[in-house]
Length: 81
Image: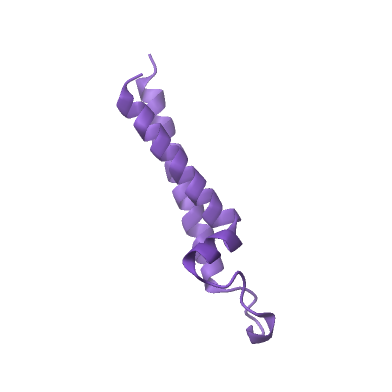
């Protein structure tokens, strides 16, 4: 396998790791961003259950994770002989 395929696979694995953490390990990512792990429950108005950052991290994390899987997987499959 050429070296660029291995480099792209490693990059894809990094994207998968980052995306997974953004989507499913949000307290860790919030601490990295300098935000509180969760908004205080007393300050949350009725009808709004979660912080908007939660949805942003979920959507962006899944998108980054799938992109890493797709780019690494497709390049590897095209270069298999």
